[in-house]
Length: 167
Image (cartoon, helix red, strand yellow):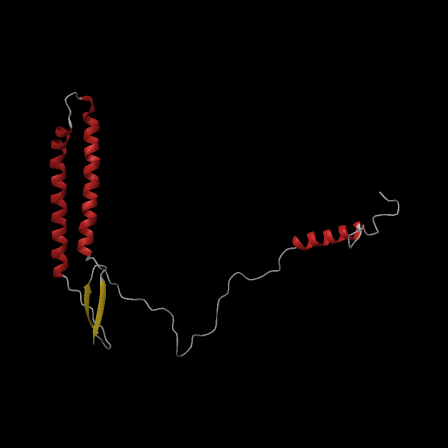
């Protein structure tokens, strides 16, 4: 090294000395690790709603595709199926010790149980539908009603659909 080059003099081809570079490096590192200013993460608009224009969402009436009795019958069927599987597994485990147990014999043992469960589900469904038929559910709506009929025509190999609105 040249004896004239010190830490305070710039190195050849460089724009700053070693001391200046170290000071600048410390400043850059301090800026990088400085905590961010406190900023809110959420905002609630407390201004009153306008008298006209956009309004908040309104609850919509319940529009089920499947009637309640059909959904109840389906759930009862799933429950009956799960019960039959459980009972069948229990009978199968109980019969493991017998040498002559076959799939056919296990099925003949569990078949009456499954039939009884299906009959109970059918009776429950019938009682519920009779009860729903006797109770009156009326929905009274007030306000203008607009009925629109749509005619749909589908044709072609790639199924082009044309809808016509009749008011």
